[in-house]
Amino acid sequence: MELVLNKSDLLTNAEIIDNYLSEKSGTNYNYAISLIKNGFCFAAIRHNNAFRFYPSRFMGYKNNSHTLHIRNHLKDGRKTNPAISKILGQNIFIEELETEYLKYCKSLGVTPKKNKRSFWIFK
Image (cartoon, rainbow, N blue to C red; front, side, top):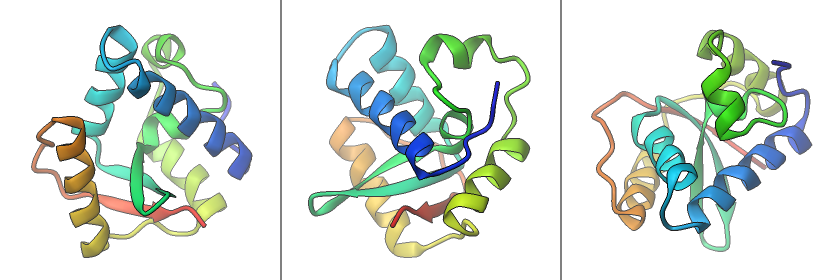
């Protein structure tokens, strides 16, 4: 699969995750929840007064989907993270975003893994 090249590619993938979450149940919804719950690196995008978080391994491939992501046996954060960093700058741990991420997970009704996470801020 082709790596993302610009902010538009990232926004397209964020919209796909948002659409899956809006379903509130089903296979796509559960898949999106799993990606968010188990992720390490996230693009943080502000929506209204809160952040939403999008996992890098999904976000880093152009025009991604649940089906394409599952079939992509070569998916690798060591490829997607540099592609996203070229667009958004270096990802880092930001305590404030960690707090926001935990709030976001709570709003989705999930408990995330106790991973060390890092974030890109989408501006």
